[in-house]
Length: 326
Image (cartoon, rainbow, N blue to C red):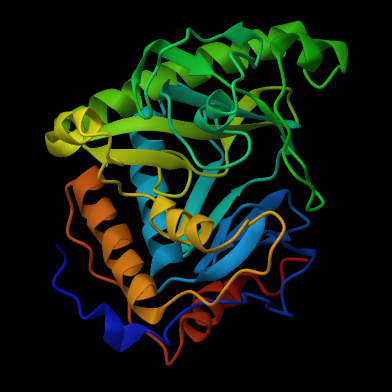
């Protein structure tokens, strides 16, 4: 585990990354985006934790962990698919190519898992077997490994709406993607997932599932965007304890935000009810899990950047050269 007193940094969180000197601000669920006139985009990863299409809380160092984990994984997969990365001027900040994001999220799953309304485990436990254009067999247990990885695409809702399950036929019928785009995205996603699973296995982890977002560059090329193989976009389990926990019917030991999601689902219906305040000890524990995930996924020690009185002050200093790029 990282040798950091996370409780001491409980107030050092980046909740809002609004910077008036930067143009064209768009605030996503966990990231603040700024579009520069020269075709570049600034993406600032906050410490907000999102699940069930809602903001649940803020986790110290989460934005830094996600940005730096994605940086490592983008570098590990650049030979498979071009990505949008240009530069990293701050631990929480990515400078990237601006893309036209495709309206379909590509989720690849290797196990029958999940807690959200679109997860195959949630649907399976409701009695559904036909989903996402395929049919799963009867008799599967929670968190069982699937015969082979499957793609479960969802709609990409840009204005705060709920993502919805899609089948390949629906994607093509609604002209969300062309047949050529669907073929390219499917092949890239499965290849990226295979690489991610291999890297995870070498680090004592199981990559159970993950999501990918793709965009189209001005020249028409399809480019990997957003993040890749992070604890937010992926479900990681510790391989050493998986089999025993699976046989006992227990939840696998995870490295992802299921830590908080599972607590919330035990307190309320997160799609309908007000979210109760997340206990501070759960927030501190989640921060430690994120840092440990970074160290395990990358094989590098996590040393947070403590520059500036606040995270936002440090980011503003590092982004000052971009204030006049309008």
